[in-house]
Image 1: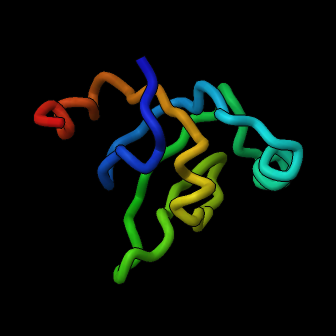
Image 2: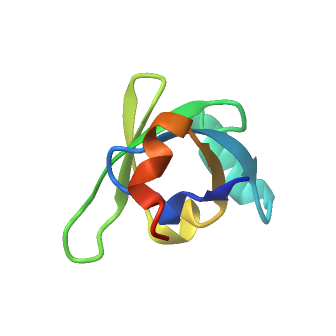
Length: 87
């Protein structure tokens, strides 16, 4: 199953499975950054003081606000899912 990007922990990797709910503005914003279903991402860190989530996709780092990240659903790679087993 997939989970919102906001639920991942730093160090986890996965594949973007869907963007939901979709909106034209959000899809265009993500497309410019090559963040779309099928892309592999790694969740690097959360900036301090409720800052953005830092992810890497296709060799590029991206800072995403929590509102945007909540619309990105990810299938977590098996090798990194044990870090969230308690959730």
